[in-house]
Amino acid sequence: MPLYRSSLLRFAPNGQALYEEDGLLVTAPDANGVQRVVAAGNWSALSPQYAGNGAEVTHLPGRILAPGFVDLHIHYPQTDVIGSPADGLLPWLENYTFPHESRFSDDGYAREVATFFVDELLRNGVTTAVTFCTSHPGSVDALMAEAQARCMRIIAGKVLQDRHSPDGVRDQTEQSLIDTETLIHRWHGVDRLGYAITPRFAPTSTDAQLRGAGELAAKYPGVWIQSHVAENHDEIRWARELFPASRSYLSIYDDFGLMRECSIYAHCIHFDAEDRALMRDRGVAAAVCPTSNLFLSSGHFDFQLADAAGFQYGLASDVGGGTSFSPFHTMLAAYYVGREGHAKQGQSLSPQALWWQHTAGAARAAGLDGVVGNLQPGCEADFVVLNPKATPLAARRTAQARNLDELLFAMIVLGDDRLIERTVIA
Image (cartoon, rainbow, N blue to C red; front, side):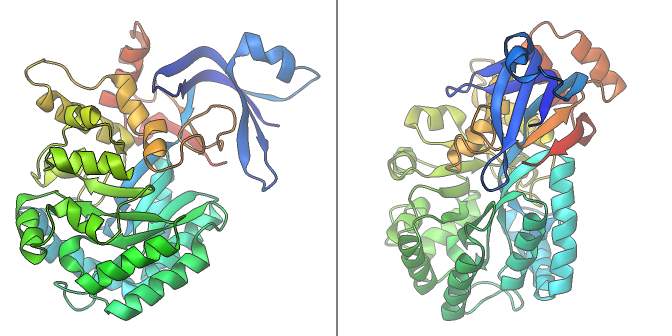
């Protein structure tokens, strides 16, 4: 039964951060060998019960144990596309993304990228990721095998795109659905892995492919669904031209049975009130991708209107449109986006809210509330060891923090992978 003594960050169900300057984290394996949190809280209160009789305690002075980060939307095949200049979303896809993703027909290449991708996630403290693969089934096999070997919780799926896509990434309608069902049977629910039915976005799928994806979603209610929606004005116009019978871009997915719980749609920027109500009523979550949206000038997610409508959301890197694997960079970009949306009030998202949206809040949005993203009893014990003194400036600033919000915000603003001293997988 591993015991860790350190400062400890976790979250209450309402998103409030709970912080112990001198904390104790106790974990133990469940019946499947996965480490789960047994107890978390104040050292003085818990140590008599757990740290007696010569129990070995890993003491980490000056460090903070925090939940592993949850990335709600990322493209593992776009690892090598990060930092590619383009005029906007559609030119970026045409000039960089599609040509690069065609290389994943080579299983060896897919395995090499999958290994690097998982290394990079863990180096940045990301312990759960909801991930796009490519249209090649082998890209899913490569990532899932790598994640399984690391005991990671990964949700991923083969991209569906049977039209308006170049040779090398365009799939065939019937075969794409057969491949999806085969991959569901092969990987969903194996160890800590989950499968996501994955239309790239509505314009690159025919009616037949979207209809088939919706039928699979109904047949396998335990799998996830993921796609993109309402990211870019040109994309929205294109989608509306291709599906004129649907009320809105978002409604296209609903019309084909692709909106239900455990559905995650990236971006969700250009919504109206009916779209937001539909997200809430269907139990669908948004993956908010601020570094990508800023990089591609797509627009800003409206946190205020999402909260008012009452639908779930969480933060995501969206690599390679996103500009960093680092959750610190993503949280900082979300702060900028929130400040833009709150311009009249002169305020933005609180440090606790930002951290929640990339951990326990993102887990809740993904249907994994109480499973990952937190360090409360019963959760899988994925966590990071943070060193707030990892750089001279971070050390100087965090030493002057007068309260938890100042400490968290200093790490958000100044942090990167250097603050992640260690990533622990359950």
